Image (cartoon, rainbow, N blue to C red; front, side, top):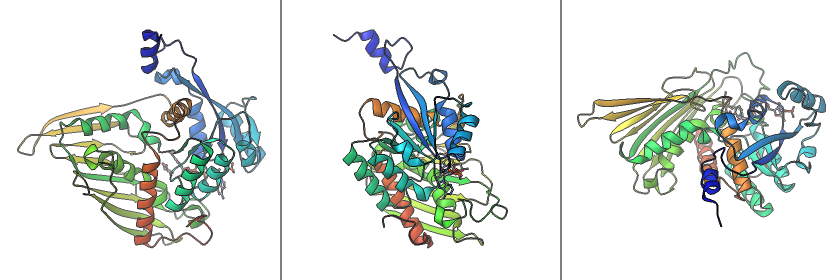
Length: 384
Ligand SMILES: NC(=O)C1=CN([C@@H]2O[C@H](COP(=O)(O)OP(=O)(O)OC[C@H]3O[C@@H](n4cnc5c(N)ncnc54)[C@H](OP(=O)(O)O)[C@@H]3O)[C@@H](O)[C@H]2O)C=CC1
Ligand SMILES: O=C1OC[C@@H](O)[C@H](O)[C@H]1O
């Protein structure tokens, strides 16, 4: 017989729950900037964000050099002696003490790294963009199904409390249906000062604006338009794109792409831009509806506030509500919590950022690159 107190408090993630939290044991691939940010967040006590049903443990770190792996553990995890430092990624995939692998290498390595982890029977959280092209992604999804493991692109913004609230308001009906999304992510990478071997400039590492920061404006279009029930999960009927190249290497410095959703009940468009030479703008995202707007502050990968504007019949703003979000840590642990819960519950993909959304993203990026004339150097795409 189910004890209702335990049952309901489990659903609420309450400390009253008489359950042992699941500990997800992580192996980390690479020691770069995002791997450091992700691991710092894994080390934040989940109770500080009201999470009591799962927890995280960093078990091993793999780098192309064992010294770098150890230096990473010393710098990020206070030299924790229980964390293993490996000088190859393979040792992480084969580590019997881990459940899941986090991949933080440059874009063009994601396919091979994720495939190696899947083939070793590990659950995978792989940085965005999940692969170079949709063919690679299809192959990874097939491999994950064959090996019966969880697989997800690390689209961390989807799991942040602000995004969950934006989605709730967007779909509750008061604003009507969404009509237009404007979203921009720009970041000045000082491309004239960094080496051409930097991952943001090197085409062999998938350099340029689209693949690195394009996922975020697209994410907001997916959340607001693709996910809207009136869209019935249909892909855009039109994609139009253009790219500006850097004068330094053949990667895009800025990209504009627009999407039209008109196959189902929804008639809506997204106008999306990204740049590696411009500074961020405010607001980063505006979602316009029949009867109002949601206006989201930069940085759009981890916004801390948004405004909801309700329009009167004359089109003037009759009411504006401001919502502010704050939390300890960087905000990457929300995606890690999702992985832990999915693994605990035997799910092979997330309901919030499932394979369909990564496939949509990579299909759109392939088309934007085709229209913009962005080609990877030969051999970079492992599957075409
Ligand atoms: N979700 C988010 O907020 C963010 C996501 N990202 C994504 O994470 C990925 C990595 O970005 P970032 O951490 O900034 O990159 P970094 O250059 O800082 O780190 C990449 C790491 O990958 C490893 N690596 C393996 N092969 C290569 C290679 N040929 N050249 C360079 N590094 C290599 C290295 O680790 P080692 O030497 O230890 O093997 C390196 O430290 C990208 O796909 C990016 O899109 C980036 C920033 C933020
Ligand atoms: O994911 C990202 O978000 C922040 C950017 O600065 C970074 O280059 C990108 O990879």
